[in-house]
Amino acid sequence: MTIVSIFNNKGGEGKSTVTVGLAEFLAGNRDRKVLVIDLDAQASSSCALLGNRIIRQATEEGKTSAELMAKLRSSRKPIDDVEPFICWRAGTETRGSSLGELAVMVPDGPRMFEMEEAMNWKKDTQLMLSRLKPALETFDFVLVDLPANVKKSSTFCINGLAMSDFILIPTRPSRISLEGLPLTFDTIRYVQDLNTNGRPAILGLMSNATDKRFQQYKSNFPSVLKYSKAGDLPPVFAHHWPPMPALETATDERRDFETLKERFGSAYDYARKVTREFEKRCLEFEQQKPARPIRKTIWQTLGLK
Image 1 (spheres, one colour):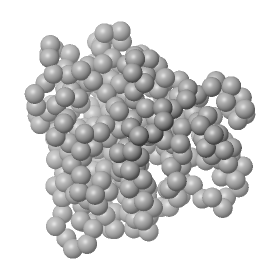
Image 2 (tube, one colour):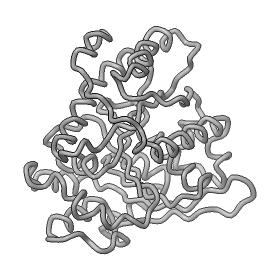
Image 3 (cartoon, helix red, strand yellow):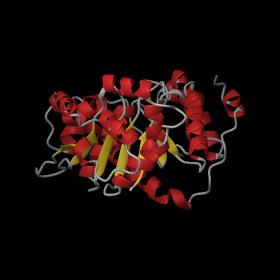
Image 4 (cartoon, helix red, strand yellow):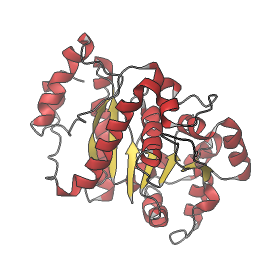
């Protein structure tokens, strides 16, 4: 079982879109058992995978990540069963690239904010790590969709990061997107210090909404690639997602998809290649050399704040 947070502390980088794409292709194309834990109050990935009606029903029945957190806080030992907090999206049985079965844990924004006020950031930052993670062993992959603007006091989201083995950072190749990386790495370093074991490790940067022919990419991303290859920054995925409408409509919960090719259209091959690289990197990570700490001066070198 591998737990990966999809995280960038800047908004608008495509975290939920990437989460949905990875979940669908891991389940439908790679035949993996996948759980998506949605910790973003906007519930974008949950909406895309389940639809609003099921989310409303789950909220009414208390089948949410917020109610799970309430149970974790009241328990003195790891929970035995996460099934009461999970919604299942059935797979399809159509010819071709059928959708796979998926498990989703939906958020409840108001209840999450309520829980956040009640939680102690010194005592409650590792509840998911110690009391939830052992119950997730039946899944091959657990993807944690996190919001932007996570602070050290964002105890709910810090739990999701602390429980993770790896972090995947989607980023656009624009200047304003790259300006958000220092804060993202600061947040990750904070959680690594909490865990005291170097986890969650950074799996890599994934370039999203990227066309290598555009000046925006040519002006901003080659320097990131240069320092990544030198080991001064985490690895950059070889495959990327282009700026294609098909990737945006893939998360439209109003559309009824039967296959991966229907859902992702012309972006199918891009999403498939990113997912295969993602899975390979997860499997091979333990054989890689330990990552060097990211020097604070690297941001000045890159001309970032």
